[in-house]
Length: 277
Length: 81
Image (spheres, each protein chain N blue to C red):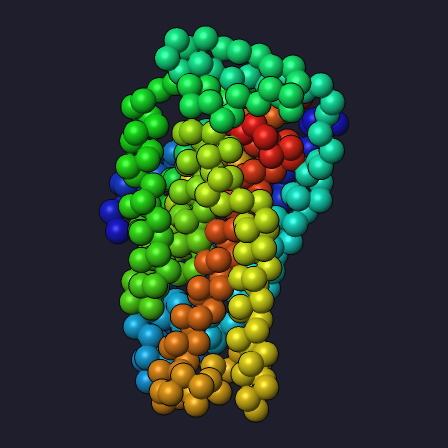
């Protein structure tokens, strides 16, 4: 069976390599893609959308449907992780570990509802698979996370002029919360971005994208044709397309950020949302 | 485009890909897959596709590796086949 698998893999690889012979050479100006489609975008992007980064305008304006359904795919991926993994019932007589901070002694509490030491400042709840307190990692991550988030917002907002946009910025924004969950614990990440909030943000981002398109439809233009937004935004139709791209990118960023946190929380806590990585 | 650099990165991509497939330790496979993503990110930026490179760096090498590590942490580290 293994030999058959290797043979099939080698054969299909050989076919794929054979198919690349027919490809045009890399960066060939006479290849079909470089003759008709690319020059149109490269020449007309600035005068039609006022966006210097051609990739952004193609992604969110000329090929807006693609990006909308990519966002939907990411939302569905998060939803599937939620449906498959999330467990809502709590297992009875659960043992919860606390650490006494001044002495470093671990306390195990069988019935934490009767005796919650949460209010006492000296006790800190810890995971059952617990690594020792590391001030270097915790302090470094706490210093880095605000700058990470600021950089993520810059990537989203500056996607018109430089590489970046909603997807990348959203992933970096979600990764900052994941870094908090990895370096501290899942509960301190959930205290800042709770389950309800990030689960709600996910469809809200997709809705911001699809809603912008539907708004264009309501204003009497095609779906995702942002120049219909010009009277609402108070700008001319070219700048309206630029601003429309920005609104859509923010929606993508929100959806991607929330989905990354959603998938991570479900994966790392086996759907119980109590103890993370 | 420097062809020596290109060849080096392409070789590393192939090595990381084959390593991620063959290694028995799943955590090692996750790390090798992260290395593969990072090499692909370098390749994209050599080819001038900076947006794709950025996405590959953030999604493939960054968050994807964390997801794999989380999945390995909650399941098993050794593969059976």
